[in-house]
Image (cartoon, rainbow, N blue to C red; front, side, top):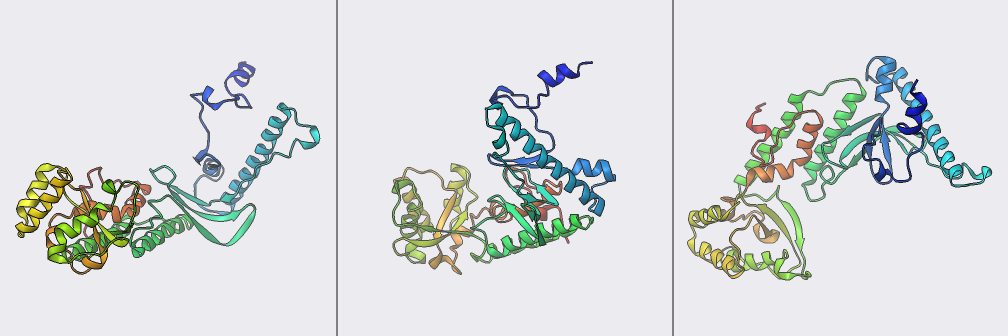
Length: 340
């Protein structure tokens, strides 16, 4: 009875001229979107038709068919749009869009623009072997140790392959991978190694030198240089060391706990001259500290924060599997509750 009313005013076939005019609009069956694309899901059609989400020949047939119908629907909508703006009949189909990739498995993460998936086709051409699609800076970090990045990507592929073969992922296996890295990071830091610290480069010129990484060049030479050796003028590579110092009180405790009080006095003077009362991280010259990490710095390293920063992609993978471990203060890690 209300069909015409609903179609005319509530579920119209064409959107209004401005989406901003429709604050309550909802996209149905959309998995992810960006400014230039939308990724839609056919999983509900597969479940309705086959009774499960398992990969089967029938299931693939369902999502292939629904993708084709969606593509044809887009052609129709664009033709209607063209007709509404006065395009000649012979040119109604000149405005066109096509689906680019087909993802048999698509894994969302809790972070915007972070996901990974398997690609089986591009613009209608099928791949001989599935390819991996990994998006998001936290899943493709450039400053983390290559070994960690490579293992995280391998674990993503294992998750994809388990889903593709209708297998479940053993959580104890994922825990074991993360636990091993957590222990390796702890042992490396306690041994004074620099293997797992983030790296970068201090340039010779910045727009604002007094608030740039260049300050750490002066900090090293004035405070640590007399004891551990000076570093030459930038540019040079550094390793970033996060410190477990959140306030003035903890900074004061760091001064007091240093065995070398002459070094502590130099640090106090450096902070006083620059009107700073605490410091949360240090950019140390790689050429000097590799294999020779100052004991004064090791005592203040924020090991939990460092571990989280290095293994961030692994903790995101856990969240994809429905397990939320790390809290906002980085006070809970896998090794706190799991042992192999």
